[in-house]
Amino acid sequence: MATEPLLPFEVLSSVAYLAQFASIRETPECYTHGAKVSSPTAGQIDVFVKYYVEGNRTTRGLVNEAIGHLLARACGLPVAPNAFVIDVSGQRLLEAHPTLRSSINAANSYPCWATSAVEGALANPHHALVIDTLRKWNLLPKMLAFDDWVANSDRTAGNIICTGKQKLTLIDHGHIGGSLFWMPDMLPTEGSFSSPVLPEIWPKSIPRTIASQMVESAAEHARVFGAMNARVRSILDFLCEDRLSRNAFEEFLGKRANGSYERIKKTHGVLI
Ligand SMILES: Nc1ncnc2c1ncn2[C@@H]1O[C@H](COP(=O)(O)OP(=O)(O)O)[C@@H](O)[C@H]1O
Ligand SMILES: [Mg+2]
Image 1 (spheres, rainbow, N blue to C red):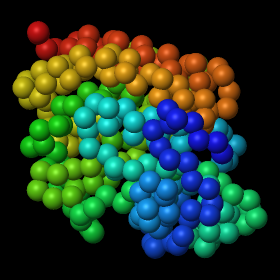
Image 2 (tube, rainbow, N blue to C red):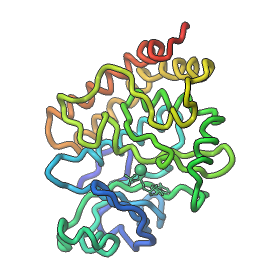
Image 3 (spheres, helix red, strand yellow):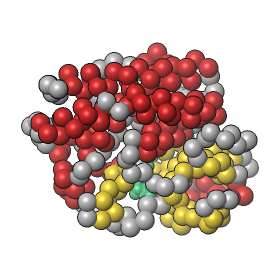
Image 4 (tube, rainbow, N blue to C red):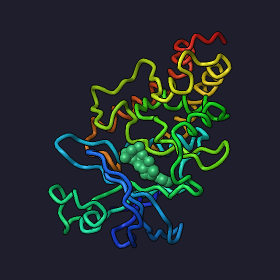
């Protein structure tokens, strides 16, 4: 893989993978484990490696993760400081996840998404603690507006890491574009996208002050997208094979960014 200067993540070859440190989580679509890797800029670093299973359907895992991470950060939201696309040998993946035996080949290598292990993550955070922290978090309106912009269908408490009092970090942007398996003609360019975590924070309705702050934050999306467009394009060129999908995703993000202010204002009935 060649490195391209605008890419917002480092591209690491399979020799950069040093050792596995934990097997974390396996779902039918994605296998995640902890590993130590060697990066030219960050040195030896602990990361969480995500392998998106290539099945019958085209998974958008890598492209979604990379664009979600970039745009969340550009909006001023806390994400893992370092991000990588790393080629992991099939043998290493099998050591971490023996159940992949029937679907991957030990002799091949597979591109994976990796983010630096968030420091101070509580070992067993209570779901309720994340929800409680979110309710009082000053960046909550920004997060809700961002998830609406990129149509993130998977902002659950499990994808928010609590690292201390009033400290949260957002992970897992595999489901932006409405789904892990978006196709060019099904990207939701219109309509509001409500976060799955929202009813847990406020079962009835969002407080008016939060809704107004969401609208204020949404007003920034068009500018953020303008500033990040070239980087988004470079991620799409690098990770997305077909031209139709690349163009559709860029257009989807641009349209939703330009419509964010009006869309969120309308959804939450905010009069500004
Ligand atoms: N950067 C990170 N720092 C700390 N823990 C992480 C990080 N990335 C993933 N994890 C851990 O791995 C789990 C699965 O990661 P996630 O990205 O949510 O994958 P999945 O697609 O399986 O939901 C998380 O719940 C968390 O425990
Ligand atoms: Mg997750």
